[in-house]
Length: 237
Image (cartoon, rainbow, N blue to C red; front, top):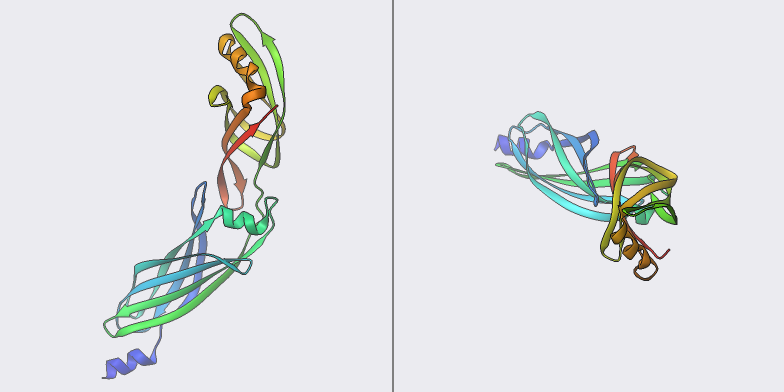
């Protein structure tokens, strides 16, 4: 009975510990929200943590992680992975980017031999302004034609943010034309195109009809770390 009364008299408390980026992908990021749980009870607990992520006051995603261990009569740091989708961030911030206030609301449920305790917790912060690069077609320039190859230059404009370790490929319709890599692309950028004559002339003759496809992969440096980028564009020069 005394143990039961002690369990009812003391409720675990939660304090902020740290926030970091666990993973970055093309779809979004996993934010590692860690909290310090002070458990005054003489009983260990298995904790289920339900979370809701709000961007600029709007709930955009929810989730739950189960089976987090909390030691008896001790402080324990719990790590809760919170999923952030870039599509949600861009819809709030716009492609140009602006700082976005965020909030994670947690509901911790600790299951013990003495019963279940519930502790709500909320953590607020601000995401830095992020800019998504925009790649637009400028024009083609034929540099050289001989009996074996056609050498040309594809001119594009990379706006809003520089692309690093850029790997690119061009297509006419679905037929690959050329590919390459540059260390950095920012503003007006020239990309070399060198292909065999037979293939290139046939492809170039159909550009106006089939259009020009252009794929780009690389990353941008952000306050969150290197953010992977993949773009797919189609133009009719």
